[in-house]
Image 1 (cartoon, rainbow, N blue to C red):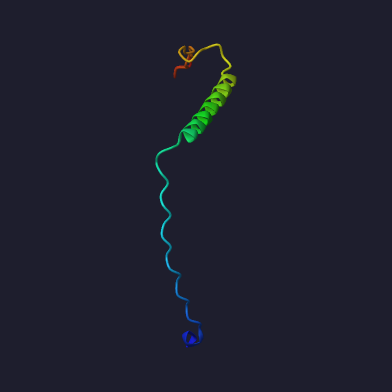
Image 2 (cartoon, rainbow, N blue to C red):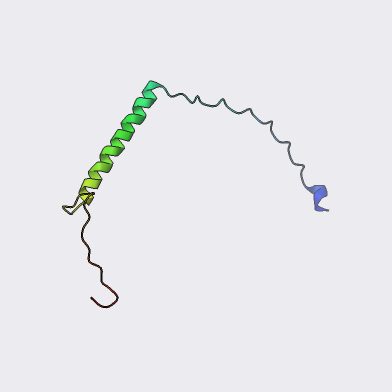
Length: 73
């Protein structure tokens, strides 16, 4: 009985067409902007990496670490 007194649902608005897809080709200005951003990120990454290293060892050298054996040595 509740459906007799309920209002009717309004009709849906028409579907609008999709906007045109952006071109896949980048302009030279956009390429330069992307390259500058990547160079800045690389500079920041190298700067932070140099502060993290605290030992005189380089990446190629490995520290000699003695591991304990199960026999208590």
